[in-house]
Length: 110
Length: 120
Image (cartoon, rainbow over all chains, first blue to last red; front, side):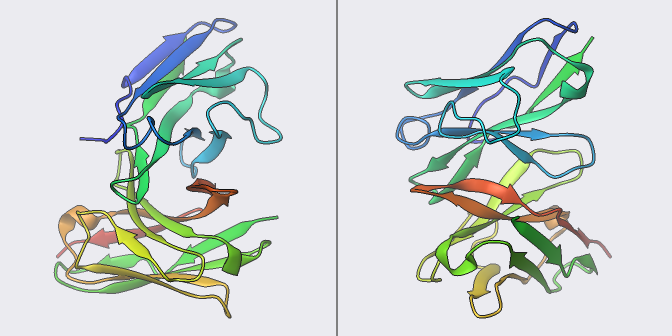
């Protein structure tokens, strides 16, 4: 149902890495940049990655993003317990004239 | 720093109306497009509406088109969402967000949200 497609869940042990994929189309990821948001339980989403691979100040460099064609990905290295959250990708959609969101990926630290 | 504070949520019967407000501070409100995003209980994020910095263009998700109207008062640094003909499926936490700027219209900063419950 979401415009962008993400896996519903991902997990890893502390210290390990996880990668979350985000698949879109030519009207969104294919022609615009990808953002990633982190939503901790009970809180508002927070911008984690913008313009495919840029981190706002304060975001650890354990978080990195990339984009290729109509897909984006978020990598989290050195997993920590505080990384347990929902992660959403988004990209402006030229047909919607609004941001398209992925359905969210719940990251669990085992 | 950027601050966005939503208000106006509450419980409303199906078919009723509600107006949400988003008070902005810490940035030049009149220079940025603004976005409404909602999140139904236990669900993901859904874009609702976008309004350009000067109010010249407004866009809506198909799910709310014809029922919701967004507007802004740049003299009061306030964004609005008028919601009419509300349905049970409109029940959600409604966030306002500031666009990133620099040619990127996706949400940057978010408010804490205001809860709208549509129920009889």
